[in-house]
Each structure stands twice: as structure tokens, then as C-alpha cells.
Image 1: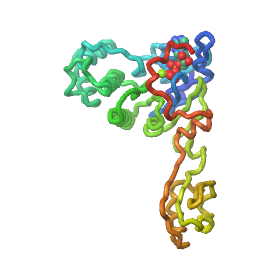
Image 2 (image 1 turned 30 degrees about the vertical axis):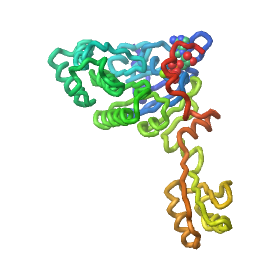
Image 3 (image 1 turned 90 degrees about the horizontal axis):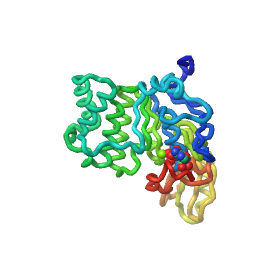
Image 4 (image 1 turned 45 degrees about the vertical axis):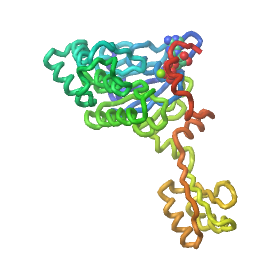
Amino acid sequence: MSVEMNQQRGPIVAEGLVREFGEIRAVDGVDLEVAGGEVFGFLGPNGAGKSTTVRILTTLLRPTGGRASVAGFDVVDDAALVRASIGVALQDASIDPLMTGRELLHLQATLYGIGRRAGRERSNELLERVGLTEAADRLVGGYSGGMRRRLDLALALMHEPSVLFLDEPTTGLDPMSRVNLWDEVRRLNSELGTTVFLTTQYLEEADELAHRVAIIDAGRIVREGAPATLKAQVGLPTLLVDVDPGAEDRARSAMATIGEPRPTRAGRVAIGLFEGASSAADAVRALDAAGIAIHYMELNTPTLDDVFAEATGRRLEGADASADVTTGESGS
Ligand SMILES: Nc1ncnc2c1ncn2[C@@H]1O[C@H](COP(=O)(O)OP(=O)(O)O)[C@@H](O)[C@H]1O
Ligand SMILES: [Mg+2]
């Protein structure tokens, strides 16, 4: 086995990773490195290559080019060692609706060679962790979408993996269940130090949850970094202030050291804040000192959607998330 690879590097490393399906290059030269204990967000629209990347990293699919290591093991040469180190909750995971949550956890324990008694204890712990203790003995077929995703998470955590892969863990969930799952992921990351690789097509999810984000489009990573850094690179936050008609020039000069003027309509002044959102207060003080009345104020900070738009020329926001069920085999 080739354990020499990447021992000193992060728990997830991909180098020039490629996966072709006939004519389609689903993954087109992906380089990434995830640090230990990090929540890494893989953000992109439908068909971008997220699931294909996850399937390669979790040893379910062979790359046609490049290489990757997870937990220090090569995903092709040392697939069994990779599998022993990771937990996986896949997008299209099917779980038997005629079993209870507890039964499925016991089965998972058996699959991982955990003894009966230890398996029961571990199941109780995990049910508690994901808030399914009450529902443990009900058939999974009757679970809500959010409960099923939390069960998926518990199943993926059975063997205490150091690296966890979640493929679109909240797609199709209502906002409340989504927030619950975010809390769960945050908690296990901070309490257990688990490294989390999660894919999503939701901007807020990447923004809220991920320490670092890679934006993938058509098989290629187009941006990578901390959400705040990526957003700051797109541009300065814009402060809009409505003032008395005729006072615009005075307002602009009062704020000249705080931000650069941006085009806008009459009665309104727009400036790009040099020092970021926190200097909005300085702008208010400057206007007040100049005796200019403020009628309305708005602060627009760049979002990850602006980052995506700047990188690809398209918007991610409003892209149809419900089309998700068709990914995978469409081949178009
Ligand atoms: N088994 C497959 N056979 C042929 N094409 C596939 C297969 N799996 C994925 N693809 C194609 O690869 C591209 C990336 O798919 P996928 O990784 O599922 O994207 P995502 O998870 O970002 O929605 C899509 O064009 C998809 O149709
Ligand atoms: Mg997918």
C-alpha cells in the first residue's frame, strides 16, 4: 500500500482529479486540500460535478485521471483503509422504510464489526446526538425528510470516522430542518473535531457552515477560500443613503474618506465602503456632523452569489434546486 502519500497534508487532498463518462468530463481537473477539523463546503449548481467528486473521494468511483487521498490513504490503492476512516451520507442513499431507526443503527454497527453490546450503546449515543431518541423505535418510512437526514448522519457516524462526507445533506428540507441539521454538523465538528466535506447548492448553507468553500462549475473549481474572503474579493460593501434632493454632493464629500462614490439615482448617495461594513457607522457620523438628514439607509454586502456570478457570469440563486432528482444518469 502506498501510505507515503500526503501524510503531512490535510485529511482530504485531490490533485488534478478527473472523471470522464464517455464524452462528459464530470470532474475536470480538481485540486483541493481540506485541513483537519475543517468544515469544507463544495458549492455548485446541479450537474457541476459535486457528487462525482464525492463518489471518487469515498472510493465508490475510480477517477479517470489525477489522484486523491483521504485520511492519508490513496482512494484507489488503499480504498479499504479510506473506507475505514470515513463516514458517508450520500445524496441518493436509500434506507429501508420498514425498519426502525434503532434497527438500522444496530445493523450499521454489525456491518462495521462492532459487538452487540457496544453497538447498542453507540446507537443510543447517536440517537441522542441527532435528536431521534423519541423516534428510535418508529419505522423509518414514517420519518420526515429532516429526521431521515439526521438518521443518515447518525449512521455515517457509527464507527467514529475522522472524516465525514455529506452530499447535499439539506436538499429538499424545509428551512427549520435545514437549520437543525446545520446545528448538528457544527456541533459534531466542534465537539469531535470531525473534518466535514459537504456539498451544497445553497449559498447560505456554504456561507453559514463552511470554514472554507470551493465553488465548482462544470467540473472545475472556479473560486476557493473562506466565504468572507471570497466576498471581500468581489468588491466593497455598498452603503446607500437617501438624503434631501440637492444635498447629494455635500453628502458625497462628507463621506469622501470613507467610501468611493457609486452611480445611483437622484436623492440617493451610494458609496463603496473602503474599510468594509463596519465603517457604515463612520458614514453616519460624518453625515450627521455635516448636518445632512438621513431619510433611509441600506447596506448591501456581496454574497457568495456575487462571487459565483463574478466567476461564471451566471447566478446560482434561484437555480432550480428541485431538479435535483434528475442528476446522475441524465448524461447531458
Ligand atoms: N454515471 C454517470 N454516467 C454518465 N454521466 C454522469 C454519471 N454521473 C454523473 N454524470 C454526469 O456528470 C455531471 C456531473 O454530475 P454530478 O457529479 O452528479 O453533479 P452534481 O452532484 O454537482 O449535481 C453531470 O453532467 C451528470 O449528468
Ligand atoms: Mg449531486
